[in-house]
Length: 453
Ligand SMILES: Nc1ncnc2c1ncn2[C@@H]1O[C@H](COP(=O)(O)OP(=O)(O)O)[C@@H](O)[C@H]1O
Ligand SMILES: N[C@@H](CC(=O)OP(=O)(O)O)C(=O)O
Image (cartoon, rainbow, N blue to C red; front, side, top):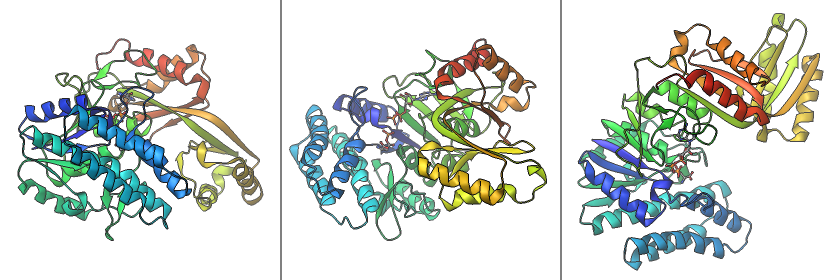
């Protein structure tokens, strides 16, 4: 039995949903279909989830959401029209969304989640109606009834362990099960969504809960490429990679799969296959526990912008017990989360997402580190990009760091910081955002030019 998830790009129009129907029907093992909300039809189109967020924001500001509300309904209507679905389907969607928008707004975060979740919920109902119209037994599944329980963290929910056992009983249901992605229910029966792109997580949870043989994730690219195709032209496709490699890469910028979507499948030992809805015969990329290591030290290079570093130096820092703890507890007091902490004998850098650090907060934190920790120097640098070179092969190949730094030097990219992950499957380079493209290209040429991935 297989769980198959379709992303927003695969459900953006009636034509796309017809492809989804054909793909599901091609393989009788494809029983559980997880759907996202309709995504972009072309590059500057709007995702339904973004429209819903706008709608909820307008309500919270006591503004009339009419125009945005109509834009959402128009997206579903045009899909229904293409698929020749009865108007009743759209009437129900309209009714559902108005009810949500007229609901309790006293807890804005929860209100937002309830509205956001309607994107996938209503799309699942629409897709199920289409499958039935095509003569296939298909059922919309309510995640609450199915037992998908999550923590009550708005916009950032986590699955609760007991969900897995409950979801298993879905195996007994007949027909194709159309399950909305992106959200679950708290123990109090309220809707909470995962973080953005979280339908990938739903698919993985279901694969685990139902003990599926495979979790197929259908998107709009033929494979996971060794580097973001927007940075390097026609990069090499990855045929197979490990959970660990994919987790590092998705966390560091491979948006093709949510970085939290691997753990549930990994824990149950279920392989994940990435495939293209627009080209389903392409073999895609398989994510597995172990792979043959034939491609040299690196399998992929991911990068992302929007980081800053807090550099702290103090003579004899190495001898001061508790310095690191005190430093991190200052950040903790302000609720800041950090990504990396490369360190030397007398200095340490803390890398964090810069959108967490306003200029007022920057001044306050700097002041506290100097006065409370008696640091010699504190420097905050913004506009950094982090580049992650990832590969299980690094453990076996000597000199990978030397090759990477030499390639960056040759391209005249200044390395702001280096961090070798303790997992030994990744190394991180911090560079100025303006140098990101050049740096990624240089590393790609170094590690992939002569390699079959
Ligand atoms: N290394 C990579 N390999 C493949 N796609 C990538 C990579 N890095 C970023 N992407 C982007 O991920 C996109 C697919 O993910 P996403 O937009 O979330 O799709 P979906 O709508 O199917 O959920 C691709 O269109 C591509 O632009
Ligand atoms: N629709 C939600 C969840 C999701 O997973 O979407 P997509 O499959 O289009 O990335 C979002 O946009 O965040």
